[in-house]
Amino acid sequence: MLLTLLVMASALLSLGAPKNFLKDIGFLNDYGDKMVYAVRGSWYPYSRIPYKDVPSEYPQVATYLFALPYVIMGFPGSLDTRLIAELERFVESDFPQNPNLSSSPHLRNKLFMRYAFVFSLLMVPFLFLSVLIVYKLRPDRKYLALLMLLPGGVFFAHNRFDIIPAFLGLLAVYLLSRNRIKSSAFVVALGFLTKWYLALLLPVFVAYTYTRTRKINWEMILVFAITCLALLTPTLLTGGIEGLLAPYITQLYRGLDQPSLYFLAFRALERGLGLNMDNSYFAAVSLLLQFSVIPLCLASRIDTMDKVIRWSLLSILVFIIFARINSPQWMLWVSPLLILTAGGRLFVAGIVLLDLLTYLQYPILFYFRTYSDSYYDLFLFIFSVRLALLISFAACLLRGLIGDNWVFQYLRRETGGLAGSEG
Image 1 (tube, helix red, strand yellow):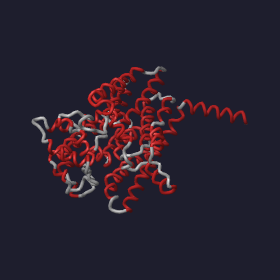
Image 2 (image 1 turned 180 degrees about the horizontal axis):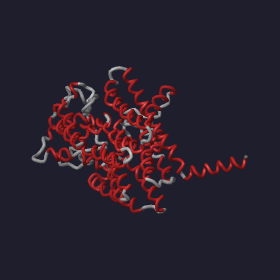
Image 3 (image 1 turned 30 degrees about the vertical axis):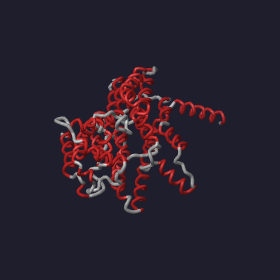
Image 4 (image 1 turned 120 degrees about the vertical axis):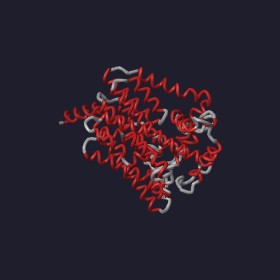
């Protein structure tokens, strides 16, 4: 029943209001990223080699998935690649500041509009399965799974592909809870090459299996490594090292096109002290902080699935908080795990608030911000509140988990012993 309703809703959004009722803020259908997906997946209709002939800033699995709408659309016959060339011009040289203007030529591109429709439909099963897994993993409060269908979650599941790695992360957790360890490692590897952040789950899973068996599970690590190698080898053979590293280099040198903690610090230091922190040194510090939870979790006792979920969530939250670019669709990465850890009403209210603030930040204020400085200031304020909420979630999780860290336990014993000897 839910799957049918989601399919109908997706079709209604795409076909019933393709131009957002002639509004220009893309509050239902947002075409910017979909244009990029359509161009990055064009290796299939062109019969070209991805990364070598058609560049992509996305990992391998994602780049292959972007071709799937073309596979479905072109099943009876060939596609008109001249219409793809029109999209390429927009993406590569003349990307519109607002891709959702009702007068935009790409909204008259029949091939692209079909691609956008099929793409959004393909995201529906992943959203449905994500809700289903959350439902199964929360037997005490199953109804909380419906929080994934709040406006922000539905919007980004309809317009971005981040619901796929979100689903893969949930599936890996579910498989681990069923003691299917090698299968969970395989899924984490698939997720890693869909969105790189999912590599953060592997240290948590390794720490969990080590706590239970007092042995490092090398089979899990080997399955992860072999799966990654199998998926990366075609790119390495066809595009060489340059083709293999291209997505990583592109992301490392990406401009500050979305607000983040890094951006706010950059803005404050530049205005207050005239200090430019947009350089490789500050970027390296930011990158290290993104992965700072890994040594903490590897030195901690993770002996329950609840702790696995909490450590995974903390790792992802810290990764997002310290990222140079903080994309709003990343809420899909954390919202299912937040639902799985939700306790009291205040925590649930925080999940709802995060969703609504994210939708308000993007797409509403993101496009309004170009109209006046007051809208831009409100845009940054809403982001700052949303960032503070993410930090609050991370602090709450860390406070509950740090007691399981062996280093923290040792320091606490030493500090307690020192205080006792002084007394």
